[in-house]
Length: 165
Image 1 (cartoon, helix red, strand yellow):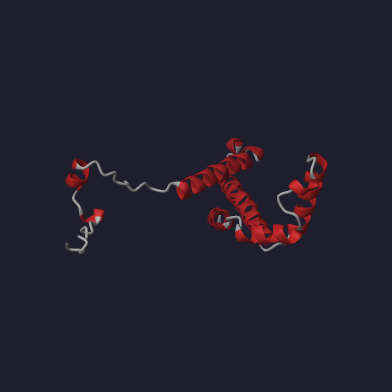
Image 2 (cartoon, rainbow, N blue to C red):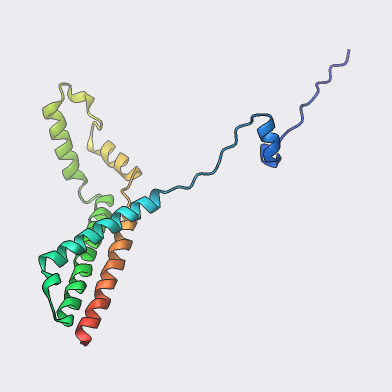
């Protein structure tokens, strides 16, 4: 008897043609586009536009006749939301650095003590566990900073136009 094992040939699915894959009913993973960035920036830009319209409505820009005043209001409509979102990004950066960790942990543990029957069922048993878990999952802030900065720069451009009139 011959004790040699017959080796099966190694087949790379990526080298096969789509017709062969379809003939043998081999599922093919179709690449899907990741729309999370588009959605994140789209929602943020929509919120910025809403803030801009709110600023224009508060200042009654639609009833102005002077071009210089309209340009000044448009400058304000871009600058105010831009500064707000840059400030929000700075707060997130500070939070990622641990500036509010003790306060957040204290409030969460106090609320869990009040509303849970067993204190040992808390998600984090001590502040060290909370801090390590928070450091492993920082909050994203770049989209806030980028959109806020772009909006602020548009406001600065309108301010330069306003001051040159």
